Amino acid sequence: MSGYTTVSGVRTRHTAIGEGDPLVLPHGGFSDSRDFGPSPARLADRFRPHLPDRRCRAPASPN
Image (tube, rainbow, N blue to C red; front, side, top):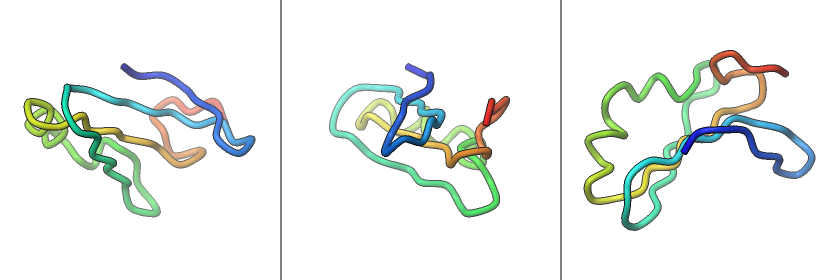
């Protein structure tokens, strides 16, 4: 699942894949969720990785 969500009035991109217990993977300050490369897909067999992107850091971010 990938799309946009609004949290505390801020619209941001969010991706979640896999099944199992949630695992939130926050990216660094000057990057976006692509920095994790193939790692989320590898974790998806045991967890449900959530990859939130900061405002203006998401690929093709409208903000």
